[in-house]
Length: 226
Image (cartoon, rainbow, N blue to C red; front, side):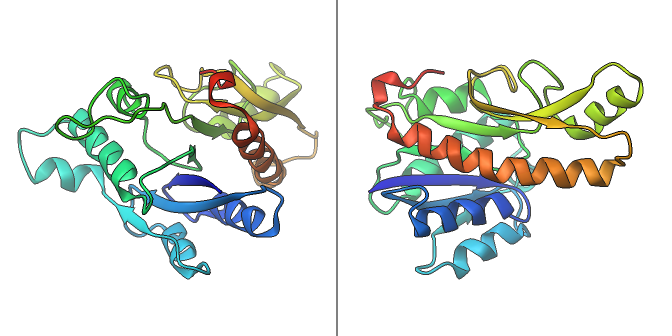
């Protein structure tokens, strides 16, 4: 049985889709075993706790973490998040980390821990790199970073693009520049407003993310590329 950790910041609709897909067998031989949020009020935490059986959760917000010690930095926060993800698993084994609406850019130091290059605790590091994937509402190389749907809609209105899309990609230090796993184009219609486009994008996101999770988990570790 493969173990998945999901990082969220909000309502957790994509998290719920993954939980349901694992339960139904659409994503075979896999379970969501841990959910982490950088926002204490994220409804996705309630979704995890309401699952059957309940999924262990943890939360740590950036600003309270920094304010608790003037010497702490954003990198310290990322290292603590990495430590909690690794040690938060009941069986201490993670096969995949999914960023599902996680609104925090992870540092190179975080990625070094997850890849086994850097220790997560004194004299402790993971032996096998853990793939990290991210859902991004844009096509590869277009609208990296925040507010991608809004920016694509504005570009369409200006006549700069004819459509947009969704991708799931491996996470690397350059934001939204990791190798795409799956990509799907999304049409923008002349009568669309931003709400209509967002609804169409979100429907595409759910299906694409589930297909990407299934694809990555079915691969042998040496075939996974970042």
